[in-house]
Image 1 (spheres, rainbow, N blue to C red):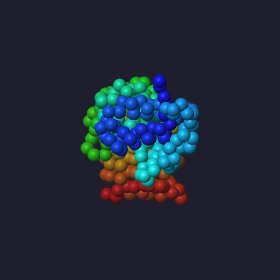
Image 2: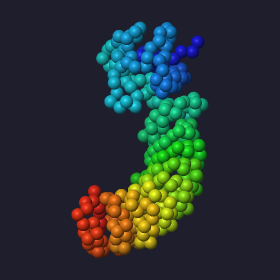
Image 3: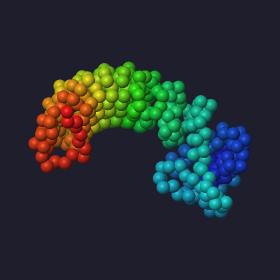
Image 4: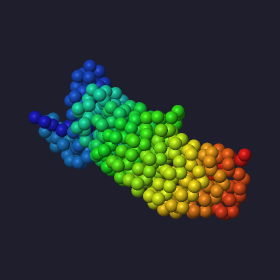
Length: 344
């Protein structure tokens, strides 16, 4: 007979298996995984469940009824976070869901078949756990993806175009971050970004900082297929030119933050961006260390972007004191949240 367990019942089972005996925990991993799925589904539905004894209980506070008085649920500070529980000895026992996620994160290849059948809310928690550890790869990303996924933070993960190409069923994806802060990421190219753009038309945030093999064709595909883009980071993508900014300016009305620092962009590209359909929405522009930019680019931003409050253009050797004067004259009493430049 198939049962769904309450939190208190599951915690007693998990504590007995995980705290008192590692061998027992290892032997019952498959059963624990099944129970976590049931717990996740019941949390989503909010429906009551039955204990192994058949007693009807709600999924509110554990204890009461036929539950053990020593099993008291501790409220989590974040309503969406996994819960922890107190037991009679005064210690704290992790929730079954936490224990299962920890187990799956460290043994993802072993439980591949089980992971694919997990409900979306459990998969989202697993994605977050794997992302923090940097353990999402081209090989395992398909196990945790689901059609309703909305955000992927892959900054610390070893991925390539192949991972982006596996997002073909993730039409509701809104945010993706594959930034790197040390060295360059050579494995993400325009081929992968174009596949992403075709698969995810509702994308709002796309960050590819220091993906040095990314070119204009990838950003153009992104601009043409993802008109809802609000944040784009292509800083450190050394092959990017004016073509990318022209595409963003012509197609992305909602764009309010763009980073194209350390690229080949010139004054013409900046002019095309700030005179485009996003001019009234642009609030944040990072164009530092662009060796081809002059005072003309700075003046264009100040002239055509009335909402701008973050403007970084330090490390641009062709920019002169004229830009500082333009800041004083064109901005007037308006206060920037952040502005930086270099005097040569």
